[in-house]
Image (cartoon, rainbow, N blue to C red):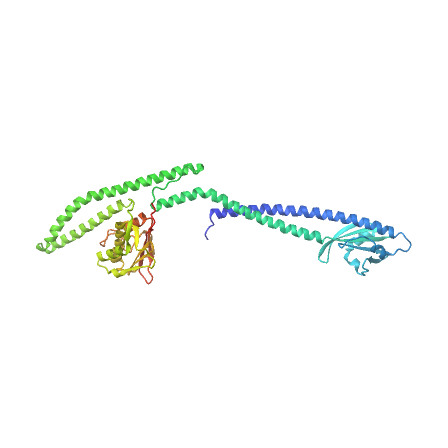
Length: 448
């Protein structure tokens, strides 16, 4: 299972922390508020009940009081319900015979001993408070006060506090995302710079003044990039110097072998065969030196000029004795491309030579907006060979093949260098129907 990224983990930690904190504050706040409101509501209900009980007590002082009228005379609202238990009978404003069923037995027993009390109940699916106050004549006055409105208010409060907790958690996640984004920005700059160097831009450096806290990392990275650039320049200079030093004696050797090769018909069969082998190896050595020189100067800037890409592709095919009708132009492709003619022609030629040597010959040269593709009729390139197919001194469809064949092993490496010089890249794809497809992307806008 793939592990979540650092930014995601930090944001999740911020969100969980904010949610836990807001949930704790929400719970404590709700408990404090609800307890306070219930206590205040109960105090108000008890005071109102005692006041009403005083009125009822005064009304029962006569010899034959009218209990119903007495209860009707009480000034109560819609959220209060009054009862009177007197001489074994329940009285209410509505003359409901089962009125006393709402009063808990425990409260009735306590009130029968002459003690006042109160108890919460559920009445008609709502919270209510029953207050009992003994009055004269061993009667007990009860008042049932509805707490439904208070309960609905607390439910609304709970929803509001829950919404606030969720928003606080979301805010915590946003803060975590922002903080990690800001904190990881220097590392992203290092990653971008490293990618630029890996893609061939050896001038990429980090700004030492951008992040003072990472001054040591910036200094180390820039020093590494400088050393790498100097090392590559030394390698290129060495390859160029060696190639140039080899060119003169190689030309002399090639001329001598050419003379011998023209006279090999006067030699015996074994000597003639030996001369032929030497001539082939000298020619291959000459091609290798030329490719090394080309790679050594591949870091030079491209010389862009408008080039008819169709004519260039046709000329590359004709030079190799291949049919010009292999060229396919995607509709909408510009005719003239601002490219380095020599580099692109050599890169395309190398792709065609590669298709002839290792891919059974090219079957199509496709020209599209900012790309060239060469399809071959070969078996394709195995997956294990693809990562190094554009490395130097790699020949044939096997990525680590060395020796054998008539190639130098530098053809595809030169293609990659020329594509990178144009700000593009070369990639290996699978051709529909079998075979390999080499695609060279050449952005037409100058990247320098």
